[in-house]
Length: 112
Length: 118
Picture 1 (cartoon, chains in turn purple, red):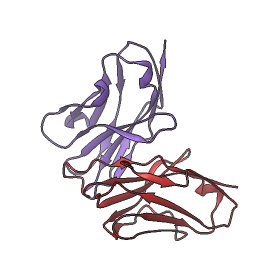
Picture 2 (cartoon, rainbow over the protein chains, first blue to last red):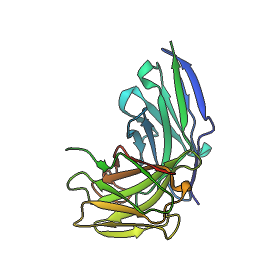
Picture 3 (cartoon, helix red, strand yellow):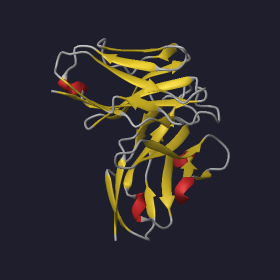
């Protein structure tokens, strides 16, 4: 069965510092992977997705993620965090219907 | 509007009552998904519609939960005899087409309905 693990429940980062959020997946076939962001009181917004091809994927808001099959990982990165990046981030894997299975989420707090 | 809309935004009900939650997907989107977000269980898939059919209902937690979609558009999620463990935010998403293997699978999420069962 497919599963997604986000090992970090909570991360605190200083504004301007780099950010990396970890995601590990378990999936029988080639995974289709997503990162979503949920800001307080807002709906889920897609940051980026990986279907195939280049393993380094660029997304919106300056985020990127790297797919590493050997490590079953799809970590999200941003070189310099802004206060507006404070939110909860979800990694997800999709099945053939498009059904998303989400990780537990990582809450990101940005300090001045 | 351009996005997915859900109503009501908040619903407070008493244990044992039935509730209906509505989702209006983006016009032209054939695929529609319901998810539930709760403190204990995180984000969980409930049901998937392609058109008016539901090929995947595997996430519905019990037979108290049902959903329908009419005209390939609006969907209603019904919870009968609500229990306190049903308290959660119910999210609806739509996409241009179903299937995770196409570039059209971006799911656009609505703001959710917060259900509180007293």
